[in-house]
Image 1 (cartoon, one colour):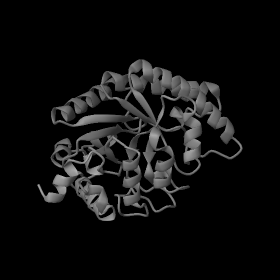
Image 2 (image 1 turned 90 degrees about the vertical axis):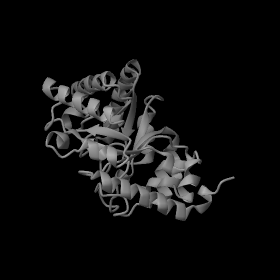
Image 3 (image 1 turned 180 degrees about the vertical axis):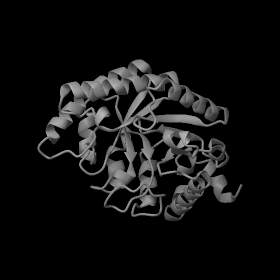
Image 4 (image 1 turned 30 degrees about the horizontal axis):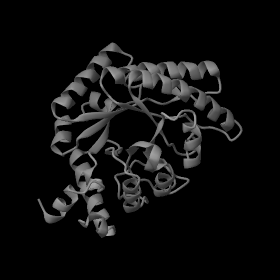
Length: 290
């Protein structure tokens, strides 16, 4: 171990202490594009499970059993399942103005939250809306979403899991820190999934500084500042040193969860090391021992 790594290892507030994670698509897994042993060999300790339900229907008992097998296989390799990323789209839009549609979306999400409970996954990530949303209907959508979130928070507590509401881009609900805060006002048990690649209206580090106490988990990828891209960190416009510092100062304790498309485990690990090295150069006093 190098001297610098030794210094990092004894610091409780250094980002290198966060477990390295990556989001994995069940759709990709089903198509043979996930090598979980390569994930383990790259030093990735935690994963998120995500999927498009129109392509991988988790309500199908065969797919449910397959997913359970993947989870067991991952855990045998020492990999923890940190989050279940609930699907999104019109059928899962809890912000629907139609009360019947919102209730049905909540019912579907509750079924999946039950699976998270059965599989021992401690947290779900939830999109507060689908899009597009017009300015005229936005107040109604926000109110519908808050009503549904309150119900889902009760269900999550009964199941012993947590809900992280994800900040979203463009016209989606939760596209700013202020709006996410208004959604979380529905229930104090709710938290945030901070997707820095979605924060197009404000700098991610500013969002973290304002909402840091409610952040349960993160999605980390880069963008060009105009739209979400899910690029590898360092390929876009996000100021990563500032993002890491803001998380450290808010005592973030979760994993650093990459959310890039078709992640290559070795590239994820190499990117994480570059981010840590850049942070140490930007904040050298952060690695000085007392």
